[in-house]
Amino acid sequence: MSKVKQLKITFLGTGTSTGVPMITSTHPVSLSDNPKDKRLRSSIMISWDETTYIIDSGPDFRQQMIRENVQAIEGILFTHEHSDHIAGFDDIRPFSFRMGEVPIYLTERVLHALEKRYDYIFATENRYPGAAKVKTNIISKHSTLNFKGVKVVPVEVMHGNLPVLGFRFNNFAYLTDIKTISLEEKTKLSNLDTIVVTGLRKEEHSTHFNIEEALEFIKELNPKKAYLTHISELLGFHDEVEKELPENVHLAYDGLSIISE
Image 1: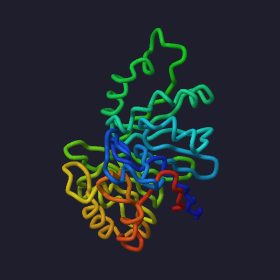
Image 2: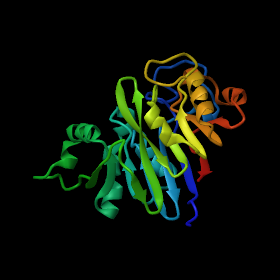
Image 3: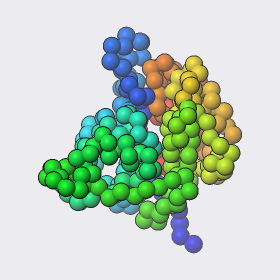
Image 4: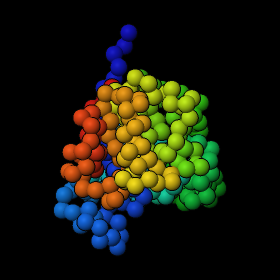
């Protein structure tokens, strides 16, 4: 029986759609000097052996790749088509220059959104020579993928009325932009080593878990460890919120790396 691969998860960004600090904000958290209170748009990198995958390419993608000195990737998985998750898509070009087609994994709906926004990347005639090249892989909540010995299962959650995908890599799960989840999809999240889930703010929100909902969800699933992401300034100062969390739950922050199976 093969040993479960150890995964390294790097938080490329842990902020909500506006990032923290938000433009024009005078909120105390946005004015904080603590680097853990500075949050780029949410994305993670998952690595094992010599393999690296990215989930989402938001507007800070270029900055995140340079900060982490990412030299090669095997592909990008997309959760959904909102700007804070796809607006850096054009910046995959340097990877395409080196490797040719960059594999992308996404639903048909998200593909249509990318084709509309980045039509020059998907053009079949008279392509701009500098445009990135991609290899499209359509997935759904019914898919099961195998990335070099790591089982990857999409998990559908609801972002308000919009279905979006989270992903389970072996015993690690990443669910961003979640407000509700069906019982059927929840069964995909049993026996987790680590889960990452949205914890937007203290007040209730129409399309995201607030921190109370996130903690209830984590308690129900009972993973060994949990991290909150997609955080706004309204959640509070990182160091203060961290002290209030259960022992196995932490606030993620940009640049944090963790190990999971």
